[in-house]
Length: 257
Image 1 (tube, one colour):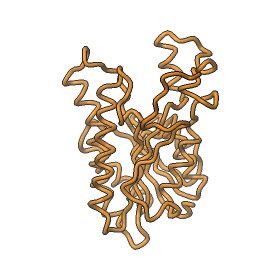
Image 2 (image 1 turned 180 degrees about the vertical axis):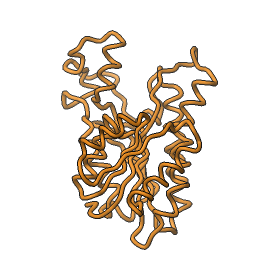
Image 3 (image 1 turned 90 degrees about the vertical axis):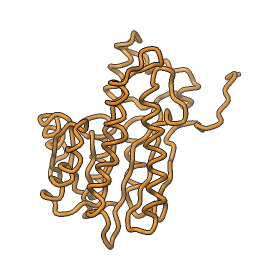
């Protein structure tokens, strides 16, 4: 589905990001793996094997996005797909909300994707057309009480996706977003345990959170991302697709009986 294409995936050293990079590789793409830490990015690249390269940089720095795109073009000579996956998932409520925390979350989760898109557009806008996939969250619609800043940032990214889908509609670039539900990653497991849940927490999930009995896994999310990067999802642009095992909007589970 992505034969002979080049894809840049941010936040791709583990979890959903690494699964996306792996799925892109399996679909025929050459992949530029981004990570915050150079050693971790290089290790992820090594795991992917031939056809992959790596770059590193802190997306809090507004100069980083353009540099990552430039490094991808220098390494591969082209760019066909951009996946904005890197994000900050810090806990926050209205009680502990701070300007500094909010600025960090918005800078990484909203500003950096927009700067990456801005830098990548000239390369993506080719005769064959490029594709951008923003990784959002179902929290964009409301969000958990302890994810105030994160939810606001994903809502901002969602509106930006729709705005750019409209603004770029006459150009050879498509942009869509996948809003991901609760996904079992290594980081999510560590977070849940650090907050007091037992090691086997994922085996005792309430059915309203996991109707099939288990959470999403990164590989399931990645397969959807490959579709949105590929021509099979054309001509759709400016769309937001929910990856969850229940309808997100309008669900009213007063009782499970």
